[in-house]
Length: 253
Image (cartoon, rainbow, N blue to C red):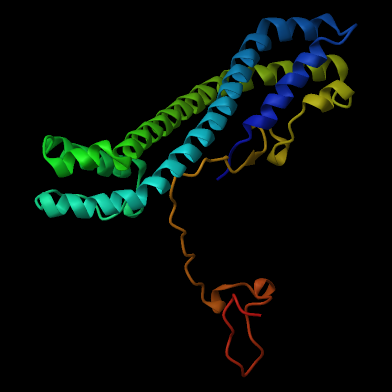
């Protein structure tokens, strides 16, 4: 099931404002817009813009966090070996890249820092804490925390936009009916603000998959194999070998 095309709906709301602002527009159209739609439309458009800004900020912070993690991965593995030589009881992951989430990576880095703090005053621990690893670790913790904060901010912005959508869409329908009644369904103004939904019903904008920002590391999924017998004959192009020959893998010519 697709999600709401918020970007398309925002453009339609902007057109509603343009229609209501046309010189000589019938007063009933202007009044319905001013008293019913304007406030809800502005609330939605502001929320939609906040999502756009938050998405851009998250992409930036995500990129910077990834770069910092990649830079720290090798020094982390090298320092881990030295730490375990002096503190074998420490429980530390083998590598940052093997961790599944940002929080896991952050825990691994902070676990290493805590271990060095526990042995503060010992020459080996002080050298590692004050050396290149200590500086890179502090920077990486900062970048990952900023990426996590940007992720939470983006989530809240999307929730606020979703909350603003309902009232805006309900009032948009009122305004659209007013335009249709006053100017006719074939008028240029009505056609500009008309969202064509399935079965021509006013059920909301046409939907599309929601744009999602990928996490720092994603394992590729392998689609399940489908028996050739389960595929309709009209969709077997390139899937079935000639009679008497074995079927070739899908990734071979």
